[in-house]
Image (cartoon, rainbow, N blue to C red; front, top):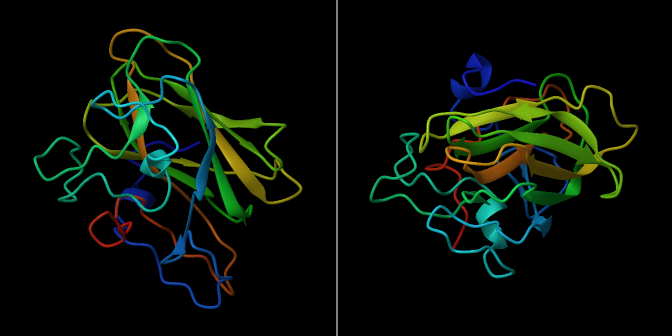
Length: 209
């Protein structure tokens, strides 16, 4: 697992443009964004404390859109509270994301999350082919509250088929353990070499509406 600060991710501001990729509503500019939230615990909410429900599951799907001015800080006046996560002390919170277009296991990192969290935050990231059997890809640790970062994960030959489900599971509870997710992006099959992507390209790849 590779966390924020990985030079090859954060220095690239936009996804490489792909041609010949299979049509999918969530494949935009070469990034295979999560299509829907297939499950989540009762206290999943945005930073303002509004609980996520069927009408707001889009907070964690599709392209990154919370950082309105693209400066990496989540709480500027122009920013949007379109994130989903946890800030209460309830343990075991989770969000499960679903991809219609499966995530292939290619060279390098295959999955990226755009998020921010408190200094004591921690979560485990797991993946599944069928949504029933999950295997851990690694963990996400604490950060600087309000500052977006990218966490990256490699499927690393763990699965015989493309991954369709990813779960983030809270593993730390208490003060300064809040964690909020803006988007989840992944690789797609491409003729030839695969370009790296940056989940933080909010100003250039935006969700409509």
